Length: 92
Image (cartoon, rainbow, N blue to C red):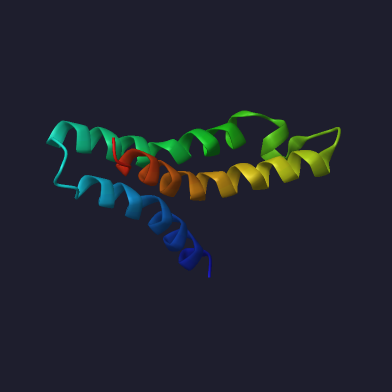
């Protein structure tokens, strides 16, 4: 079950990056840059979870609030690539 969830999460991150890479209306350098931004943006949110001790599950005060923030950042990491894809593929 854990492998299935990891594959779903990776798909939610990789698919918008691949869609941005497959566009034909932009130059190759711009497409690669957009795909990298989309693919690496969730690493920032997940990096916050592992970098801040309170978000890593070691909160001494307000553990419920820190757990809630950790869940919000995890959801953001899964939704952010799609938001960036829509934003970067919008008409200029």
